[in-house]
Length: 615
Image 1: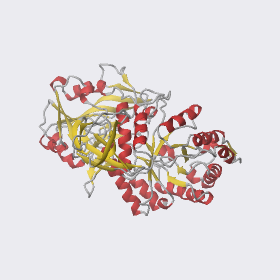
Image 2: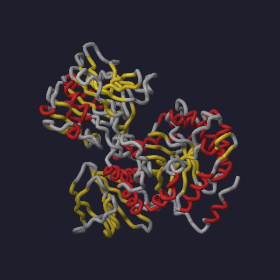
Image 3: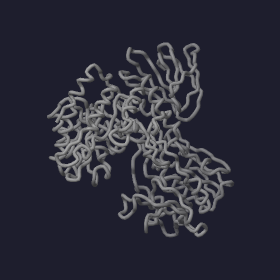
Image 4: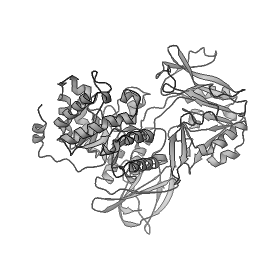
């Protein structure tokens, strides 16, 4: 096999930039290949020094012993020419060796072939992608099985090239049980870096990211890997357009509840202590249902005293979470005849709880609390025969004869499994696939120990406005860096935009035509003002106000300030240094002058950066 050394000689005068924490994910070897050279230049212009993409086994070894390196050779040269380092994902399978973990000789031959050919141009490799998901693992996920693949791959790579950094395959979210199972089988000692994909979906990065990372660190420490780096090999927010479910479903749910918008006061949560907000990233009840009588925010502790009535509707967030500490208050409200709306997914799929140190964590609990709420649900991974995709969703009732349909995205189904005697479930919306028909929205009418009603809509609607994506990107990165994360590969660089309502198609920070979104500008601004070689940020908060301080190379102080609750006038004293510039999260200059070493300004969800000072 011809080595890439001949290509490297041509680039001998070019030196890669110093290592940095800034990376991105792209599918350069797939649909983006034709414009890969342009994308790499655009990445570098944003301060991005690392790119992650699949070195698909089946694309490289097209038949046993038959290899095709043309595309990967080309990408390796292009990346090096732009001063960008590749994190290749070594993963998946070939038709003669699947699943890979049961065909280790073939898989290790693939790994060895890639390392021998590209070891001089790739400083790190990642073994698999999201091995805790069935679709990627090619079977029921198992931490022990993943360890049985990772350990020999690690040994093979180190045997061939000890200088290559071997990364644990980035997990979907932070599944501590799965990771611990793999650590028990030896995975903690068969990696140089721990990779995760801690997507937040319908929540702000300030909510649980830092505490989730602390939990991962404690687990790593228990298995002797506490000092190893943590990377986000994927992290991002999709800007997919939110599907028009609620504006069409809510009037029917209201009718099933026996309520009318103009006589209804919607009670929403706005709780700073638990960072729990009904109207979080993209959902506002007033937008989905104009004409409400009133909207009234309460804290979680006020739920215990909330009066139930036929003109009051308690509205939960659409992020499937609720703190179980307040579950008795929620069921008490239902016993008093209260009415509740769960506008997306399940009302308590995730529990928000404090650990022994008082830190909030988001814990997936599945059906744990559903019986207490008399709710029943299922989906394709809990009930065999349930479709993974729907052909359409149609309203119940003879008034439209099933002709009106809604577009399909993510969904949960509801059933009568946990109903008590006297309770009823009234269907409002069905999802259909062939002969299958399941309830995706409806109203539970209780006449047992519970006396109220819960309106549910199982459609998931992830996605944030482009403005939010641009705000969340640098906030996520600064929180992660402050928590000790050493590198982030933002997912993703370019959007496919193949479908209006497909979340996967809109994660990019540039559009399909490579036009920058605001998130691209936010990335470039962060990489300029917190450049490679900066110190780890020191992050503190005062309620919704967040302040990060760091030193740039040359020991120059810098700071970032943002407020997650909206606009707020703040006064901050300059602790050290002299203010040289102020820029917003998109890089625009902001005119501010201190008075007696005090800065007065409006803090908002978009970061303000202060160069030359510690705040």
